[in-house]
Length: 327
Figure 1 (cartoon, helix red, strand yellow):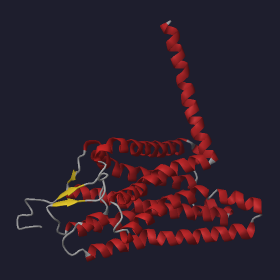
Figure 2 (cartoon, helix red, strand yellow; figure 1 turned 180 degrees about the horizontal axis):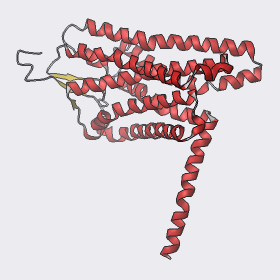
Figure 3 (cartoon, one colour; figure 1 turned 180 degrees about the vertical axis):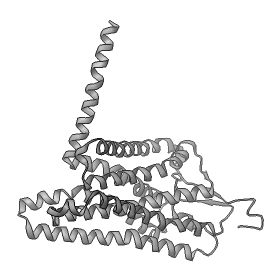
Figure 4 (cartoon, helix red, strand yellow; figure 1 turned 30 degrees about the horizontal axis):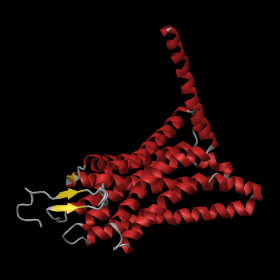
């Protein structure tokens, strides 16, 4: 418990790896690092291709760039502590550093939710009124939407750190994951945490809760428009343009719902279950989004393939010339 000398003895927070599997942490880290590598490489590739190719200067690809940036931020926010736990068994983290990591994780998570609803609006306008698509979603409008969802995420999460800072903690506090989450820090607090708990619930309901309802409403309007206007072949072709976004929505909300349900109803579940679901929640969207969009978006897939093919041809003659000189 905090004492009168607590300012000289700040609380210690210990991150958790995979309890009972500490001897296998290195092998467990291999697939996790592979997923991080694919996520970072895939999202950086999408950003590079969209940035360097003028044919991608469209609202859909602007939003896709924002989604890639959000995925990169989410991956980079969790990667350092996860590797320090799995590779070096370094579990201790300073309380302020834990709050900073928590802030960025939840900010990027809410940001991704806002970008997904923005992309749903993009698809709705493109299908509902394609003739006004470019006039409604101008470059300035896209920038304002992106800035709006970013500011919403930043300001919603900001007070949570100060509320957690005011609580009292034990001398040693063991967290459940290899990264800091709001509900996990709140769980080890010793003083009254009702205000922080209510604020956390308010943030969830006003961000991802509202966004999920708007996503359902957007897809209802899309389906009603497609089924009432297009033929069967045109209907399938039009809905296929929403497939990548629909996969991104499922990849984001299903793990988040699973993590929420296990925290609420899985009190007797194994700690490994908590850890696996939390890792899926933070790793799946950054991993899946670039893969799905690269495979299902023909224009993007073609440009990425041509880009790598061009780079390969650029290096091959140099290698042959070098070998000839060696002979």
